[in-house]
Length: 445
Image (cartoon, rainbow, N blue to C red; front, top):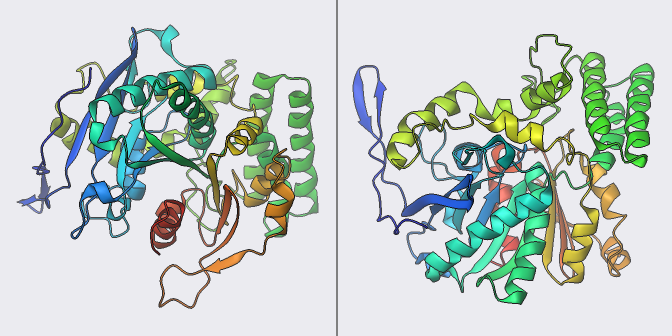
């Protein structure tokens, strides 16, 4: 059961600074709660109503944001580091998406963020379980929040969240057709998404070489590592492919002096982790987790979520630590990790669901050329017409003369090339990300 709607809440969080207590600014209207998705698993959601000084929230769309990992928390990282109303210092974010949408953060899969399982067998191991769990959440959400049933609803995502978003979008479309969920679903946004892991991996060498981060010798080593992954994928040895992926990243770090997988121009690499050597079979997965999920649970954010925010929410069970089950979430999805979801995107396009792909120019882990590669594999009949379109230059604001992005669109497929952004587009280019969201949700821009 969902709790009754929360009233407009004051943040009432007090931070200590130089011995003085400072009261933070008033927050927008919001609500949160748990949905038991299975007998031994519960999912946490956090809704912020659109916060515009001149218009009611009903005039704006509702966006559900899904983080990556799997195991990274949208209620934490997406909220306080990317698009929520406050940053990790609890200061107002100038480019919050609440200016133009209500935002629903959901910690998924179960075990992520504040979501939890009571049984180790309850973790999701594939996209099918991830999607079916989310259908329970959305069914309960729209049944409880009837004011959102007619409002345009979009799913936006990042990284592995994009793979989950594609699968969830398809199941939601089917549920709406079947009449089991009542909502006005209008499209899905796939941001720097792990739709085709193999295409991403095969792009690493050429991308790094073209940006002078590999020499001939390094390119040869990375290419050899990528071919081993390709061979494992062709043999449907998906867990082995994930292990080989970890080794390929080691080779990249050695050859590039620790390039940042999430933004090649950022020197402080979150992927450069100190991992004790281990003979354990799970060691490569642990290293992958530490590279790609744990940095999103950095100390400052973890302290915030397990301290002031936990106190504010008041409903987090005593045994649940924010992010405490994330490692298990990641490990349980290891078999599914390298499988692609290109066919799911094809089904969405065929079903006439609006699909938006957006990618940061400086992202390595999910490089833009890798995204373009899987796009070319679509069986969608309109692909040639999409490809033939001229892309259009975009500017972050009317006064700007600097190109911030390029955009191409045909029928129900859009692609945004976001310049000077890495893996976390809203964190790197907040103005352009906000503009893109307005364009996707058919708002004036």
